[in-house]
Image 1: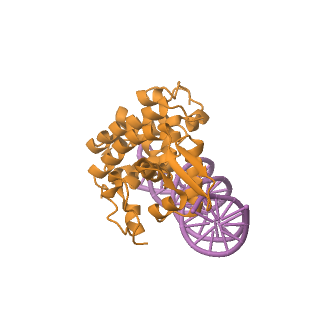
Image 2 (image 1 turned 90 degrees about the vertical axis):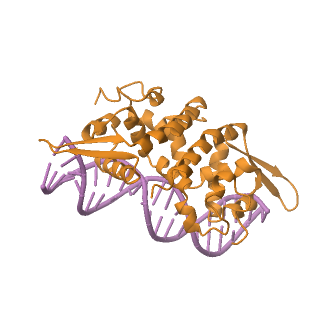
Image 3 (image 1 turned 90 degrees about the horizontal axis):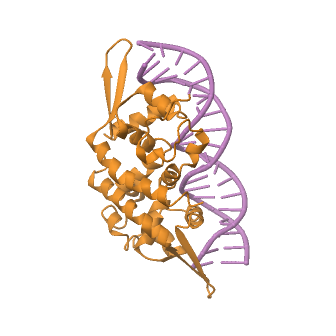
Length: 125
Length: 125
DNA sequence: CGGGATCCGAGGGGATACTG
DNA sequence: CAGTATCCCCTCGGATCCCG
């Protein structure tokens, strides 16, 4: 149980000093990002917002298939992660605009690379 | 239901012809890959195998925290996706070796880019 | 050694209804 | 318009036992 992860790749070596307490592994930023990428909608929203700013219902209609609950939840999480910015315009009726932060935009780069890989290599099927 | 996804980013445009049946969206290779990235262990296994080939229990010990069930499941899925190759050596005791396919290795590139982004931009916290 | 089969809890995610 | 609240299902993933 002690001598594990000794030959871990460089990309993760930064995260696994060695006899890594498994709690540390859960907090690993790489896995953290991977988790977020995995939840059904996050990255789709990021990609949409990479296009331009959207208002709430506009986003809701554009993604079509996402529930209000999940859209809201996804946006809140992305907001907490500083990937998305939320701007409220106190008009009548109220208007809320979502856009990518600089951090969010920077994520778009490696993300697109991955998306292109997926497209280029078919659905594996 | 009809006029949606008209301003979808180029990266997804390939996948969403327009009045997209949501089943199609589920089959989208980009989302497909993202899902797989998200499930707790897949990409960790890919990264490990990016290092070198591993035998089953060796992999099990190296990741340490993964259950047999999930390791097996993850490997099977990755195998179906042609990302991982499984080789059985009919020795006594039996030996099974897992390694990345060329496809799997090619995934490693954009994946590392994403991992580096995650490391560079802290855990957002 | 390399798994498969089964059971179970946690939470991700959809549908629907309601609100400021 | 932009959400919140509730219910409920279903999958993910861990634990445990068993097998060739």
